[in-house]
Length: 155
Image (cartoon, rainbow, N blue to C red; front, side):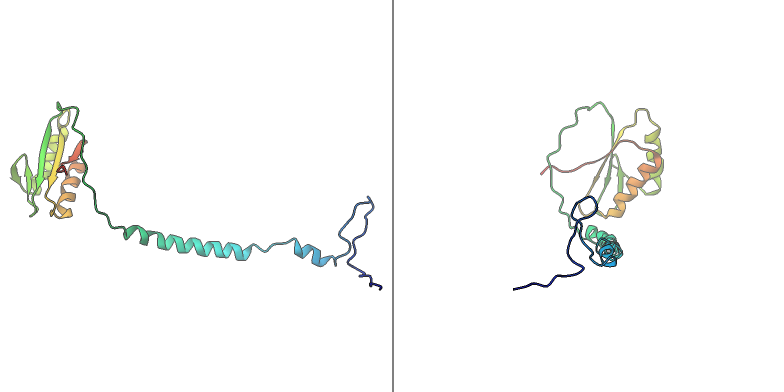
């Protein structure tokens, strides 16, 4: 039984005596070693755009139920504190005295001017609107109050 010889596909020996790949058709051999990266880059860029668009959607959909914690007692009781409270109707109280929104800035400016600054202890009803809490925090920040804390009930 005789087998035919494939003319261009048999490997031969080069001048150094090592086996070479033979004559595989020159142009085809160069094309096999070349990988086209353009489609891979296009897919990666599309995936990047999809992740950039969808990432904020996942961050907004997180529902939080905040835990109650046992807080440590303050070690330094020498620092003075000013109690600021907000009731469920959004009324502000400064050390037990009811005040209006306009006088918050003046009171916080007076606290910020003291040396050392007293600590602001903010307590608010559970049903207080977030806008009222944000109003107090913004007034304290504008005045430059450095020590600001929230009063919570123990479990």
